[in-house]
Length: 201
Image (cartoon, rainbow, N blue to C red):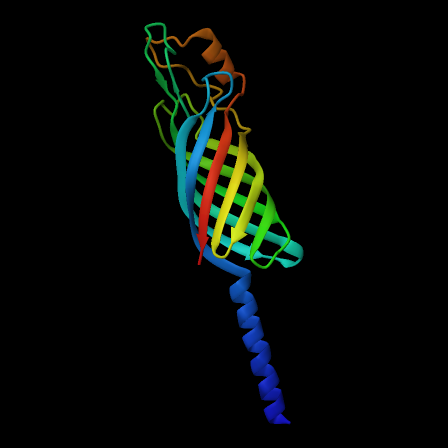
């Protein structure tokens, strides 16, 4: 009887260990960002993002995947000043997105819907932090696929917080053209597409 209980316990432990190893995993992630400023620049600037991720697989096709990224986004606004100078709005953020995923496991691959709220804090910028907000927050929505240990996600992202400090002023001696200034202070922010590839160990 004891031997049977030991065998059952070993089977349960083996199954539980395999289940846990299949249900979660660390990974590295990165990709391209095509993010611009609404009504300010024509088209989107190309940036990048890279970092670490951790995937929790849940029953019924659900998964939660938080990440920590360095994300370079933004644009260079050409002829922003009256003297023809450009305004560098490229900004590097440390971001924490949390991806909520749902999709059927088709054995060989898993397509899924993705909803990803995120928060970030600015680390580097072409403009003084007295003008720009360091804190950002927003939402990404997209589609993805898990294929073996690889994951590919395409998202459209919106930043919701104001880009400019409420007390921010433009650099002294320079005056930004009216449409750029009103767009930034009007609450418009970075938005655009990100393409992300992850390798889950």
